[in-house]
Image (cartoon, rainbow, N blue to C red; front, side):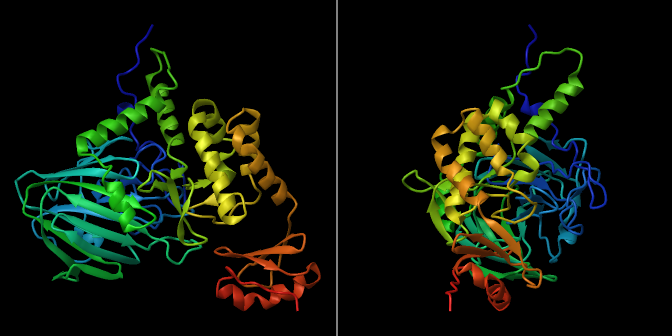
Length: 472
C-alpha cells in the first residue's frame, strides 16, 4: 500500500490557472488563501489599474495583501481592503508609490499560507487565514521600524480603538439592496501604535482618533522591527467583529488549524498512484477550488446563535447564510461533487438557500453578496432536487418544495419601456415588482398591470422597496 503525503494542502500552489485577462481567460481564478468556505480570502495584488483583473502571477509586483470577496471578475469584488507593510516612513497617497517587487522563487502560495519577501522594503510578510479573518506576521531584514498602509476605494471609516487596535468600516460593495451594507474589520497588533495618520499627496496628516472619507490611504506606525496582528471581519457590526476577534488565534495556531481543516477535507479523496504525480497535484488543486465557494456569510452572537446581515431589512437576522455563488455555473458542476464528498457541508448550504427564500421570497440565482438577478432560469431547483433524491437535508425538503412550487407558478412580464428594467411578477392578485437592486410586494389587480408599470418609472429610481400601490 502506498502512503499519502503528510499534508495534502502543502502540495498545492494556488497560482495554477490564475493567468487571466479581460480579453482571454484561463479560468478567471485567483490564488486565494483562506479557510474552506471562509468569510474572506486573501491574495497579493499586483495592479490597481485593470479592474477585476488585479493579479498577474507572472509579474513580481507586490502592492500588498488584498482582502477579497471576488468570486468572478465579471461580477467583481466587494468589501475589499489592501494591506501594505513597509519599513521606515512611507509617504504619497497612491498605491503605485507604495508597491514593490517580490521574490517569486521563495514566495509561498498555499490555501493555508501566503508568504512573500519584498525586495524594495527588505521585509517578509506572511498570512495565515481563519474562518472570519487572518493572522499576519511581518519582519524587517535590517531591524527597521515597521508600518502598515491600509487602502480601500470609495467610502471608509478608520478609527483607533486603543493603543493596540484599529477598526475599519468599508462601504465599497458593488451592488446590494441595503444602503447600509458594510464590512467591519477589527485589527489587533502585538505592539503599541506610535502613529495613526492619513497620507494626502506628500503630506502625513495625523488622525484624531477617527477619519471618514473616500479613497483614503491610512498609515499605521510602530516602533518595532517585527510585527504580528490578528484581523477579523463582520458584515453585521464592529461590535460583532470585536466578538469574532476573541476567537482568533496567534499566527502559528491559526495556520496549524487551517492546514488541518484543509487536509481533512482534501483527504476525503485518497489517490494511490506512483506514476502520475502531476495529475494528482492538479486533482487536489481542483478539489481545493471546489472548497472555496460558497462563502460563509453568517456569524455567531454572544449566545452562540447563528445570525446574518439581511440586506432586505438591513438588520441582523437569525439563520445561516452563504454568498458568492452562481447556481447557473455550479448546479451541475461543484454541487453534485459536494453531495458525494461533503454532504455535511451541503446540508448547511441548503439551510442557507432556504434562508434566502425566507428573507426575500425568492430562491437564489447569483449571490454576491445578495441577489444580482443575472443569468436566466432558477438552476438552484436542480441543486434541491438532486439533494432530495440523495436524502441530504430531508427535514428541509418540505419548505424547499413549497418554495419551488410557489415560484414555478409565477408569471413574469418585462416592460422594456421602463429605464430601470422593472420586472412584473404576478402570483394571483399579488405582483412582485423588482429592479436589479430592490424589490417590493405590490398589491394590484391584474387588469391594471400595464398602466401601473409605466407609473413606476419614478418610483423605481427612488427604490421600490416597501412601496405599496393600491388599486384606485
